[in-house]
Length: 546
Image (tube, rainbow, N blue to C red; front, side, top):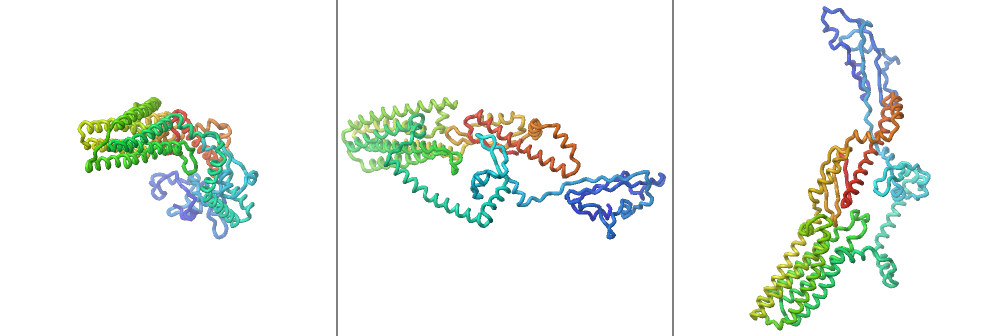
């Protein structure tokens, strides 16, 4: 528009609008020539250094508005009068700030990080500026942080130089590495000390888990199946029956697998640590999965092998009287264990509002499910083995006994396949029921601060623990109003009236903008806390701001 204005710095923008749109040379001659008066041309800058004023000539003079307009093509200031004025509207735009590495010095750092990363002591932090911030943890409302720049300055004051601080960091890393290498040895020494002097530590929570619930079912099954294996093994040695051998292997497989389940239960109650922040609840599914594989390989495989070898090389069978007696005792004991598992599953299914079938199919409690299916297979296997042995006794044909062994192996293979499938599905992280997801979503959508919920993921972590994740579109007006309700409105109005320059406006917006972001974080914490309180099965909530 004006050549002299085009030489201004890039970050100064001017919008010039004239009261009459058409150029002077194009005006109709029937109208009298208007006269113009000149207003002031204002210059604005956001650099803060005051260097972006009007262009200065070589003689050091500041050109007037008439000279600026005289340089425009097709215009002449000589014909302008005071009848009309040229209005020059100028828009000030904030200069885009380039955030460098130094800006991160305004970041906050906790006391733990300050001591670990900068090798400081608690006494070194006492003299630093302390800032109270909203805590990300549910058990505390606020905690103390420090400015990173203050911590770095204190570290240099303590250690003298960056090189000395780096040497201290490397030294501490070396000490930590040596400590990690000696952890196993220290644990072994502690174990030997406890074994020698006796463990006087009070009974832990792991032991109580075997006195009730799934732990009790597993321990009862281990004792009964161990006795069954012993007596079945004696009967097989006495009779040489293939079906009795399969039953002995079946009981051995059940005993070993239930011992593995007991190990999984004891590991699943461990508290979360830094390496496993979500705990060890999946250990029950892992133990059940390994148990299913063990049943397939050990129980079904050996039963099939012994049955096939009996068909290929049949041998006469001795008196089966003792075998029938042991099978009868095994039927009673396995039935008793089966009833214990059924009662436990019925009670747990009622607590979760599910039917017996749904609870088993969804593998809510993998340890009890394994005991239930193994004992059900054991009862059916005893009946099948007794029937085939009876046919062998009546007909004198040993092939029926071998077919019974193959039938027991097929039954074990079916149970193991079901256990492998259900536990694999649980370990993959399946979603909870659609009705429960809808319930959680509706709770969030009914909150005034939430506009919409997107990308909802509710994963079953096992043992009635749910992890919920969603992207939340917050209503900025409600969040801002929540912030203003806690502020002094009169003071804010006074601050607004004192804003005269772009710099003052920027400082005002930055101050309240940071506080509004803190309010938004507090809203996220409130929603997560209320969601957990209303739904105790939801242990971990991740709400992401959309």
